[in-house]
Image 1 (spheres, protein in one colour):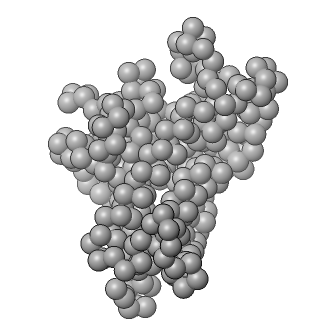
Image 2 (image 1 turned 180 degrees about the vertical axis):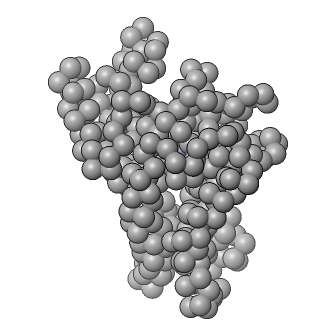
Length: 289
Ligand SMILES: [Zn+2]
Ligand SMILES: [Zn+2]
């Protein structure tokens, strides 16, 4: 499959400028709940947005496509399904790419919540006090790498059509911004997709929704593994941490300081394991250690 350079250019522009400003418009037209456009941490999240776009969307779109092309040219097919998607029909390649992205995101995200060291980095994403499409990009670079690494590995290994990979990554940004957006959409959508209401529960401080809803696009893995929380009534209203910095520079060194404090207080193993349940009955207390 080939797409013209003009279409490639157009899709790149959509990632760089399109979704970032189209989704906020939809948020104003159909809000899930009334909230101010300007809020604390807005400038910080905008810096994250373009910092992330360059680092993630653009670099990945080009890098992953190049990686897949390189693997096809130099790796070839081999044992253990290496290069299995090289000659696959575009529909098979598309579904496989979607599955690779979905499974790796779900697993990485699950461990980011369960392993205290990884949580300190992922916590940056969860620190925003209100949820809108601009809060999508608030991520620590290390956290982003954790999500991208396994996906890059699978793409390189199975070698699907680079064009399909490029298309998937071009629309990746849409999914993220839509899922974090303050957008009202039909409730039933949340049974299939990580829509705004579904992902809002993931970010909420409500105890019943802690460590739920890990999915990014389609959410069947959450339903399958019992990590879905999606009540028919109500929308969560409490998010983030008041005391966490809204400064992108601080947000990039704070996790290292927090890890240092955990080691100092409870030893190295505390970075890998949460404390026993009797000490962890209050999840927030544990996360703030
Ligand atoms: Zn999370
Ligand atoms: Zn999120």
